[in-house]
Length: 427
Ligand SMILES: [Zn+2]
Picture 1 (cartoon, helix red, strand yellow):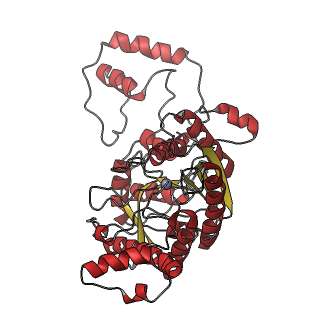
Picture 2 (cartoon, rainbow, N blue to C red):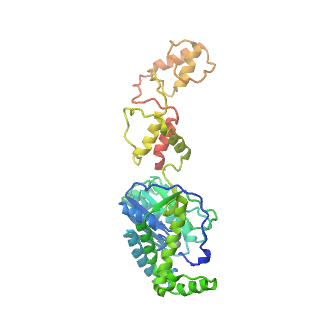
Picture 3 (cartoon, helix red, strand yellow):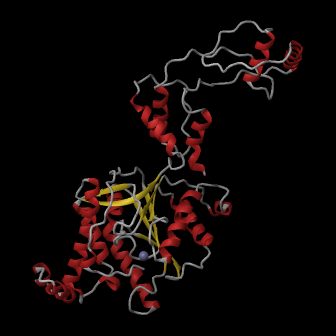
């Protein structure tokens, strides 16, 4: 529920820091999960971003977690129905046709089983397979609304856990599979400079901004306020000011006009932080969220000269984009050429190469071998007899086919780190 008190006296600028302008994420499906009918477009609204995604080919699903029974003055039952109907109208302005209501009791979400709400959201993510998930920033500052806190928390957990087959494996019997949504965008209230943390701005054009203004005005049960004009005109007159545009229209039109000014001012204020006319700000997470240091390292290597692609490319793992692989490759391109490793004899089972080298060198029993680059200092070794026992043991071991298709690793991140980055979205 978004109890809204319009007051020009509160219209002070949010003291936000400059924000980088984010690109439109590539994908086909966006799932928006919010507590209430109107959370798609308010002061923390994401209506412009939703409109932009839909204009760029996205299918959008809106999840309303509560029943909105306390939002309005028509009694619980009627408020529920009216608010759902108006949510559909508002969302159509943004290009959203699908609305799912979970119907948890409005404003009573503190004692609900959070795992149950989270499971519902995990199931919806697995069912609709979104590339982008939009919701409340669960870490936003000064959030008084219990529904916003709890749905935001359940959603960000669901975004992460929906990819894990060990989480609610019973879902698989219902015909859905684990799914890793690539992006999460969390929206926080305007906090008037009290410390809200956003990390990206999404630019809106004039059309997307207008759709956002129409979307909020559709929620007449909550936002339509014919008495606003009289109140504001009187307040301004007391300060020796006037607003001719407001005075020139009737009370109903004035209510919509105030909503238009409010939404427009917010988008322009955020736009200033990113150097554009209109924008919304978000806390964004993506597949790099668990490895920010690795991203920084790999990105800094991108200035390296190009090198022909490595042969024997393996197929991309599921869910892995070509761009991520290209970042890894670019990192590898920064490395100088290294001679291929000599064909080592097969190692005995359970024996690492470094141990064999220590034994051989210590006993001087092994024939000379070209030294590999960047050898570690050798350790004092065991006696020759120990080596002989070791070698005999190795010769008794059955022959093992040479290791297939290993290519030399580039200097930089180890193979295990590379594999961890590529498979991160499975957990
Ligand atoms: Zn709300």
